[in-house]
Image (cartoon, rainbow, N blue to C red; front, side, top):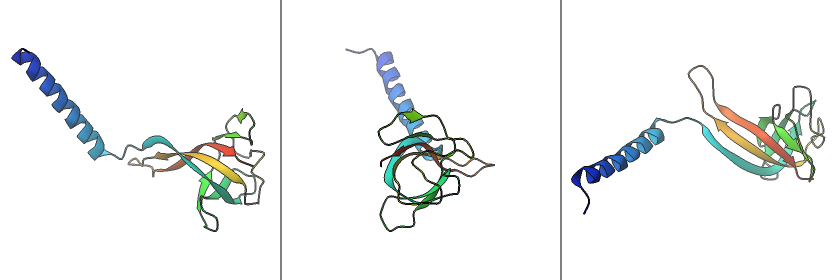
Length: 127
């Protein structure tokens, strides 16, 4: 049989975990550190290939994404270092559309001074 003090300690531990989980869930938004993988096509690439329009469904306008700072991979090739300003991947041709890509996107929560946004952390070229 378990001592009352051990039983009380275990109950308090479970209650503490439950309260901590509830507070963390309620207080958000802390951002979503999971990488959301999205596959689709570019709807537009800017003049230097560092920003794209992207749609998961053909015919939709999609959303815009900045690729600067993202790692990238050519179709079945090696991973490349992050894109810098004025640099582009070899699969995103400037001022074109229709490239098949897979994006890894993280949601960054807003703070008091700055808005949140979706950030592309990696991009795979699929063709």
